[in-house]
Image (cartoon, rainbow, N blue to C red; front, top):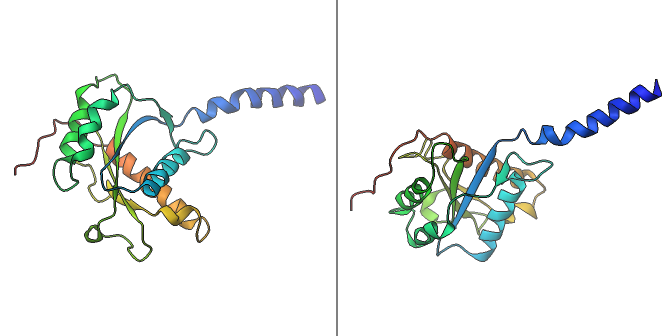
Length: 185
């Protein structure tokens, strides 16, 4: 009987890592806009890393197959004009139908007119772009994170940030493929 239990435990240990690999794979290209602050960038990257954590993460983050230099010009664009086209165009430019799933996540400073809870201070704006011509869910793909969430008020705000970024990524991944068009001036 003990031998059987020992064999069963060994089989469970051998298959456990494979179960983790069932998480969806996604390559994330991060764009940091000119107005975003260092602490905001760090927080955004920390939330993204938590989503890709090997034990508890929601995704298996993989390396992008795209040259990151293709996205450098997007850092100078405004979320109000040009950023969506630049990110979507650069994302689609080098991908083929069999490329791994990719999204672009842009970090920006939080604008007071963009909504969210401005009473906390230091909030950042996050925009997610996929391979579509337009956002699948514009409200979810233009969200905010609070850099104080990991150190203040327990884990509720930290969990909210992870949920918001995960929903942003999922919405970008669900975009209907299409050719992006620049907005008219």
